[in-house]
Every structure is written in C-alpha cells, then in structure tokens.
Amino acid sequence: MANRGMLNPVTQRKRRYAQIELEESIANSLRAEGWEVFSPTVVCDRIGIKDGKVFFLEFKPESSRTLRPGQKKIHDCIPEMYRVVIHPG
Image (cartoon, rainbow, N blue to C red; front, top):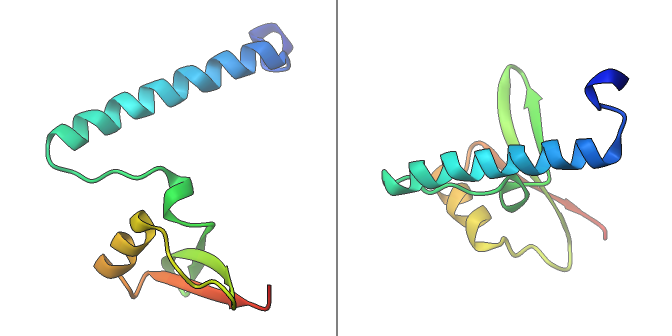
C-alpha cells in the first residue's frame, strides 16, 4: 500500500478529489438526461438494512423534525424506504 501512495495523506487527498470530480461529472451527465441527483450527505445520515430491505435513515431530534429539500423529495417519492428516527436530542 505504501508504494502506491495509499498511506500518504497528500496522495490520498488527490485521489479523493479526483474521485469526487469523476462522480460529479457522471452526476451532471445524469442531470442532463433529466435525473435529479443528490449528494449522499443531502439524502440521509445512514443507510440501514433490515429484513432484506434497504432504508435511508435520517436521525432527527424531537425539537426539529424538518427535512431538507432533497430529503423531503426522496421521502415523498419512497416514504416506505425513508425512515426518520426521532431521538430525544
């Protein structure tokens, strides 16, 4: 790993930025075809699997249950897969 620069933070950062740039380029191509594409941080806090089903999990305190616009859009499209987990805060 060391000889490929995997342990060097500068090399890792460059690799990650290149990956982000590639992903955004692909996302932009999909947007041009009419897709709505969201960053994972916009979508949810975690992905969960239970009983063989995949769920988007968003953790919200009791005092603030408001979803951001991207989250609301996804929740409205697939409410059975988007779970808002309320916690005491």
